[in-house]
Figure 1 (tube, one colour):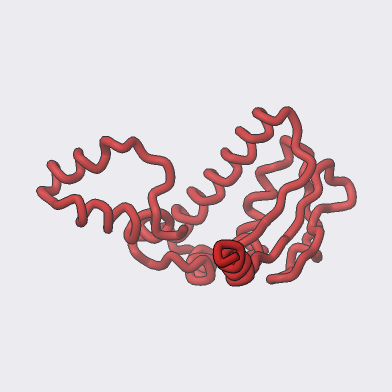
Figure 2 (cartoon, rainbow, N blue to C red):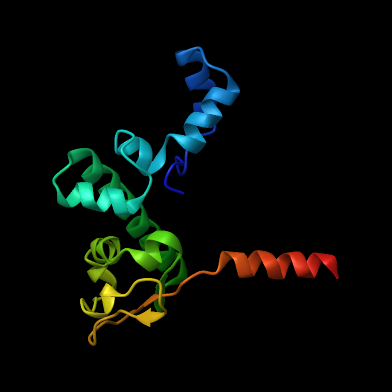
Length: 161
């Protein structure tokens, strides 16, 4: 989520409440609606299309937000690779993953340590299932679109049986 904090120590809620003399509702609103890339970009946007445009235009707050996002994705891929002992495939999905070749490239540029290489032409895909790894990549890189409405419909149908 482009507006949420990610991993935080739960004591942060109490700390912020005391420091800012605010309520639980205020802190929850801050953590759920004004954090993440939105907060890191100085409230520019939680929409990566806006952040990409601002990043390319040289906006330092947008660069900070996108770079922090990329750092965290690469950190998680690295930690899961270590936990699993290997990585066979990485799937980019949901809003940013399936629609932002710009962000995918920034991420993949930092995955050379696991042998991942990107096919720049294939990476131009938006919202379509595609393998985007380079011919020499040791890891399959894929774009896999989501269909959240279908998943919700299936879950709802299953509950109604």
